[in-house]
Length: 322
Image 1 (tube, one colour):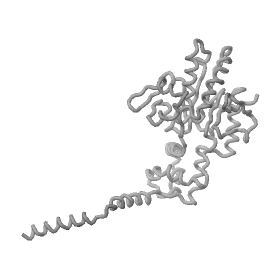
Image 2 (cartoon, one colour; image 1 turned 135 degrees about the horizontal axis):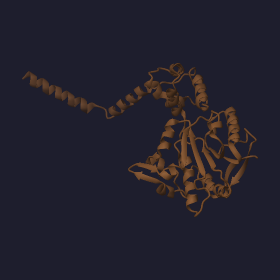
Image 3 (cartoon, one colour; image 1 turned 45 degrees about the horizontal axis):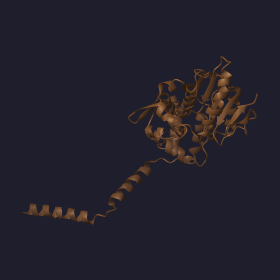
Image 4 (cartoon, one colour; image 1 turned 120 degrees about the vertical axis):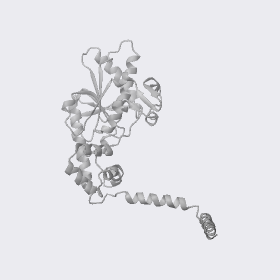
């Protein structure tokens, strides 16, 4: 009898607690979990930030402003956890002691911005097809040389493949095209993780939703094969581009000469000193009369006198002075 009575009392107490429980208890528990996660996030100190700034700039040329501590905290957090480091200073000491190429590569992959999409900004590529390709076709009719293009910050391949699609379309619309098999495209990037996507030529729905606006919307249908949620670029387009890892801080001598170098939306991350050195190397790597294509807000004019701005349609290209 006492056991039954005690059991009933326990059940009554449980029901009473449930009735009195605040409807915000679940929210409070979630908030506590978030607070615990925030406590686990390692913050970078004012003392640890400058050495890491310098290290990142040495490895990939990227200049982090003093207000960008949050970038290191968000992008390198997982590496600190992986290597069980309690501070960013401890992590940098580990990096230097190990001197591991694999770890350096992981840091560079984490810090580089791979924001890109197909036919970015539209107008430069419309004018590439409407003005530069016809000019090249005339030049190639009486030449044994090939035209060479370098997508110097190729990321996941969108820019290089965009040009390949335009060249393929240009030649396909002509019975005899002097450029067929006479244009080489090189895509390079410092990020191995980005290049992995470029070389595979496989893209998800998010990547395929960006950039295929008129007049380029037809290429999504004609230059890709969809399998489920994966879009694979056509083999004949893929064969037009060669990808490889390259650090823009290195010598350009092994790359040979180019007729067009695309370095769009990249130099904004570099120091003035690096920009001057970079434009000097680019000028030495372009063929006479070759072109440089930068982002809309970028210009070489402050850093070198080797280029003059020219209009191709309504787009600004920078041509090497002869």
